[in-house]
Length: 207
Length: 78
Image 1 (tube, rainbow over the protein chains, first blue to last red):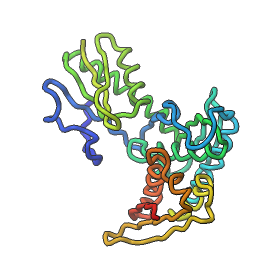
Image 2: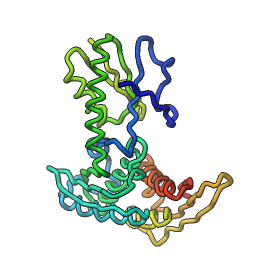
Image 3: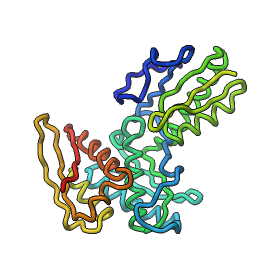
Image 4: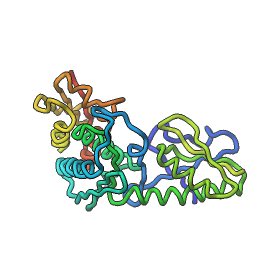
């Protein structure tokens, strides 16, 4: 399972000759149109409030307000989509489905992350409270999580077999956690993170 | 369409959405530049902490522009 995709994001990946000796660089480039993502940073990393109190809003209020925002936003963008809301544990969830929504996911889920972030900011301001929220389009996040686990496991096995370090592409904190957890499940492999955001990346090492 | 996006979002983000004006300018490379002017107290709100809000807005505007096959930039002007 070797991926060698060009990156149009300057600084997002190192070319092999820039890697430390004995280290391979791997890129997992997931096409937004066909794979999923779980880049749930905004919902996991505590975010400062733009305006508001420390009181958390009820997930139900967050979910309905977020649905209202996302529906209006997509309509303004001229996108036809079905928007639903749900509450999962203490977190509000808004799901978007429809035809041809790849544009709303974007490269590595970047547009989806922007949608989630803007929704969180808008809802937080409207409710004047801390907001925990997940926005997904076409089940992208769930599928991305699955593909990351599969990828991390295969890289861990490869690092173990070769006894080398393998450097993965930059990922956000949430994705790195998924990778670390998956690598921890492979005996004889370990992982750590290196570099600064937004180019922080996971290194997988055979032990 | 991108103008509609900003007009929709504004009341959610700023205190004086009625004072928002959007000027569309096409630069020499054919990029559509949307120049937003706002009530002075709202400038920081549209930009957000560490530029988070404007970054997200730009990303969505680019996506909306992509569908219409043109490049879009958003600038906040004094």
